[in-house]
Amino acid sequence: MNSINLSECAKACVLCSLTCTSCAHLCLDEDSVEMMRECIKRCLDCADICDLCAHAQQRNSPFTKEICELCAKMCDYCAEECSKHEVEHCQQCAEACRKCAAECRKMAA
Image 1 (cartoon, rainbow, N blue to C red):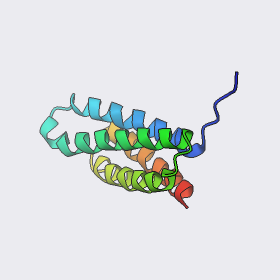
Image 2: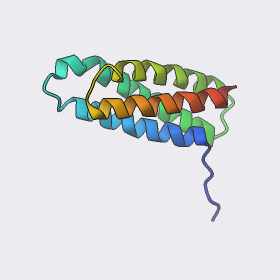
Image 3: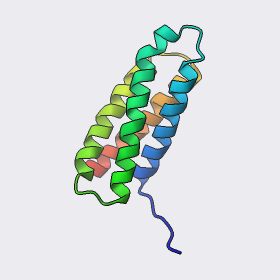
């Protein structure tokens, strides 16, 4: 059986997707869910584009570069919101998003 080789970008995308999904879920448990509304939206959007980006890379999609560019933008957008919240899961999410954005920019270059 052949082993699956994931690029550093695909790994960062998968990790970011899982982190964003977890962050959105944990935001729902915060005392002021209303204050977390934008964070939840951005996290869910970011998780979706990160999944698409990782899958596109594994399939060698001809649109990988464009998807990576969009993923980097979405990760920056999510990190911007998450970094505003002091809770640990938001801070971890912001960091995962920043790392993913950096890897996506390398892939898109």
